[in-house]
Image (tube, rainbow over all chains, first blue to last red; front, side):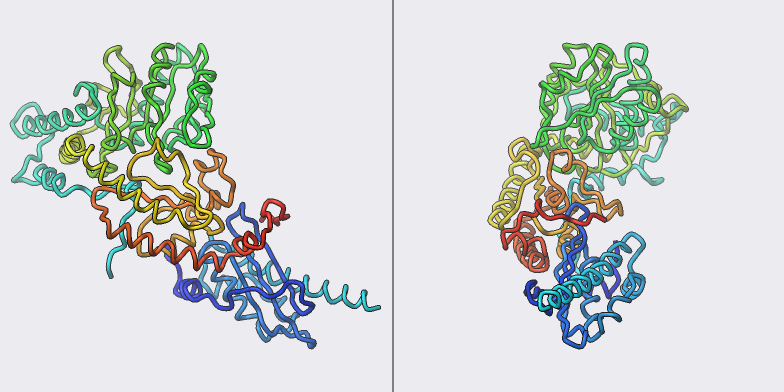
Length: 133
Length: 404
């Protein structure tokens, strides 16, 4: 299968690969997918007190399109508020990377990953407040 | 751009230049272009002579009589003709067929068609090393079993089934034995009489012959009958109508002739290269060979690189042409059914790469491949959350995955 230039670029030079400390209060972690399906994405965000994503990192087990989708997503979410990042749609990722129909699920997984990371961060914050109170 | 290194010889092979040269003489006006079925002039006679000489070479490689060779368009057609043809002819005797879950789709899908026609098919589970357990095969045989179809060499993992033992069993029960030998002819010695094989599918392009040509061995003593699947002018003793493609028959014949002469020496060279590849890769962490390493053709190495997804690895290995056991590329997202049948877990089945070496593979090709694979595995594992979890000591089976 022929990959688009953008997929190839992200695949060959993935942005923001790595991990943050899961236990840190300012970190939200989203892990989606399953090895049985051939895709697992881990997306982490570091959020400041204003609710802005300052940094993002990812690791992905999956095909080139899955790696590119998550790499692109880390670029997009940096500097966005949680609300803005939560509105990123898989169709935008698929369009930017020119994913063929059989690879649309990779972009869906990326959308799931950012949503899961935001949810994890928010749960951490509300739990932190509850513990403080 | 430099062409990638070809390590996908089980998918197809380049035509040997000696074969190409020979078959080219049967195409144009200044060559022998006649219809081998034409009886009324020398154009036909010469073409027929060439086809019969080629038939002799095909027969010789498997210890058969030339009269037992039926030309087809390839191993897929041979499998169809053998399985459907025999089942339909002998359905009065019984309607049960036995095969194995790791067969090629040309066998499995043909068996599915028989099921739709009212036959019953037993699909045996192979052992974890890919081989069929003879006791399980024997236990599956019934009074109404008419045909057993077990491939000689598996296309994905390269394991060699013990056809001689299987043939002894089926012959003693009066059951026909068919074998798909597309991946074994010219790589493993075959003797249809010593092995008690009744029907054997052969392919031209897996052994440096042209694509679009194959053959089916059909035993004459005791005679095996088939219901024709292609009707027409009654060519090939009524078993397969259609004008013979003289140049392709000649090409396959020449390829089989060369294979018979060079097989032993060639296997030794290819096995040395395959073993070099394996020893270069085996010191990586978490690599697993799929299928038995001893009962295996010389040119095959099917290996799973745990925690790295096969399609992304193939993408990383763009300097070499290999195939992935993972069928992600065919959009099914299903890992290889062959590896699943061996009981491989999903991660390993999704992480497999098939390297198949052949006549034109060099030591430089192998050394380059080792270097490239090692580098790319390292890079992809740095990217893999599963590798990170493994390194942290997380048991991946204990994780609640959100399947999608």
